[in-house]
Image (cartoon, rainbow, N blue to C red; front, side, top):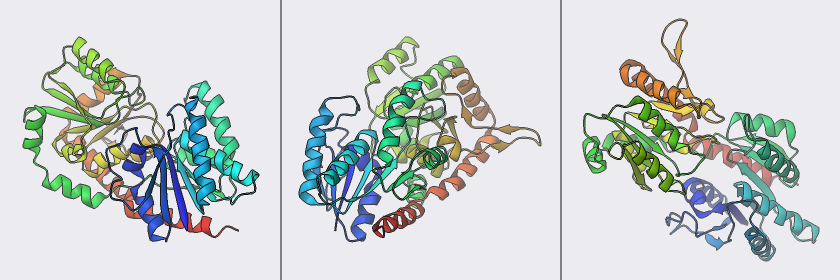
Length: 386
């Protein structure tokens, strides 16, 4: 049997889909992976027993480059006669399903098709243009999909009500994290050494984020919040690379915060280094179900996040009094609210510790073993289709 995993960029598969690859291999599939191998390639798929195929997808769905990518993907599907296609990301997901439709129209073998939506681009509060473009495209290609998998409850409800896949819509709790391994990382980490390597004093209050430097990840909101807070003993470290690096550097310099805000770039040690932080913060405008947030929760960190789909599935309030709770959510476009919540947690250690405990317990619901069991059952259900 042959299975094809399709995603727009190499880095997505490298970061999130290794467990799916292994699961398919355990089920007896020879696994092919079709991605743009030039984007976010850190070599994480090296050594895996897969056939890696370079398909030059563009990240923008409006790019003319995707026509060539489609032709190459269709030729791959025609030549290999796959039994299963599991596609991810908006561009990879659409081009894969278009190719499957063309196979069927040309009388070729039609593989079973699973599409995992890692956060629809249309959601409560999304720009109207997102609904006009992405919603209609997904509704169209849902009919070409055997199973749609969603990773948060808002997307599951929407897809169940509005889309008509050939079999059904399923919920899976993200891509999974290894909570046991993260606990080991936390226990073995040298907090003082990590801080020294980052140039952060032992006595400082250290906030960390992990995420690409792009508009959606919204790191500037936290930088603005810390500028409002105006405390030189607060440091903020962001792990990630991306197109907004220069803009963020300019903002940091304009605020005179070069010493306190550090763009640490991509690091394989980013999760381990969370052990040196006092707070994790995720200010994204849009998420499906954020892995870095789950990793921080499993690490036993208090977390503050934007009040958006996915994040609200994870965050739990801390009881303060009979009538009052601390809710670790904020509006992503409100630096003043972010600043106030950082200040509250910094000044209320007991609340911060309670939030950390809640997070660590909640993260176990998204452990890799549970996710793998769910995906295994989904794969089996598709295999049984007539």
